[in-house]
Picture 1 (cartoon, helix red, strand yellow):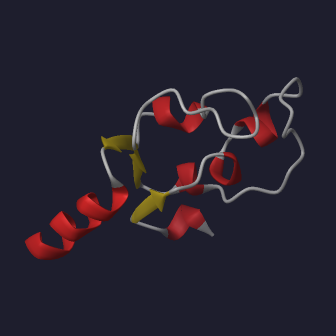
Picture 2: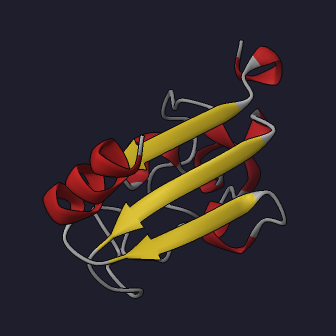
Amino acid sequence: DFENVDVTIVIGASDTVSSAAEDDPNCSIYGMPVLRVWKSKVVFVSKRTIGNTGYAGMENPILYKDNVEVVLGDAHDTCEALRSAL
């Protein structure tokens, strides 16, 4: 139901939200059930660094989708800053 979601925040997940599980038959997680967060209007992904590959051994393709913003840094610090701003 992510098609009806305005904003999704992804923290500490890679393979469980990877579109490669549906789109890339050569991927080791192809066919695995995933949360289709990329269908949300806007997605914020909190990551320490770009390049973490997770179990699949590849970068998550959602990081490069037009509606996805990657927020680099410690997730706890990022969430605290967001909470304080609200």
